Image (cartoon, rainbow, N blue to C red; front, side, top):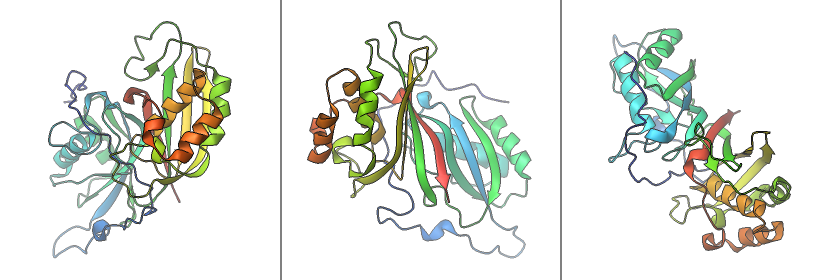
Length: 291
């Protein structure tokens, strides 16, 4: 029976997980266990299953399994394990933090199940709560790894910018009632494009030793309802990086920071100068790109 969403579950305090640059750009090596050994006598061959996931992160402690709260990874592993009868480990392209959503998270898992792709897709979805869905599922090469093969990721951040808050968007956008100057926000975007050291725009507790990232695209649009959509694609992201960049762009939209001010903050490599971090509910992992 399909379970209802977990919106009533209290979220524990949890750190946003790192999103290191994919493809070993931080000097990280692909785990030796990414490949699979040949089956033993009488055993079916190992399959590598790639999934595209959509989820509402509002009720979860983030992507990664945690001791003090329910995670997306845990719920997926338990549902898939019930389908296959195996102990399952799901590997995601990155670790979204508590309260962050996904439109196109990519993940993979290994199984010896002989169930057809369609049966796996429908069966897993029937065991998942209503706030997590597997959109696509297919066999992939055994060497494929959702994290280490990723070439870039794209995030979307939504700001509800109008005088009256939205009842329907309360857990899915940052509500700012004071008008933001979209032109000023757009004028600040080129500051962050290209390859930079983003020390000023990430958590001081990030685990990544290398803070250099390349932002491939960065746009800001506003629709007639007052919803501002900030989209960013990069070769990798640091902890709190997108949310800190959004906070800086909001300062630009409020007239509190010019492009020159933000360029100086970027060059200073000092998180204390960057200002506020946008709240998690407006952030969505939009897409993960592979070669």
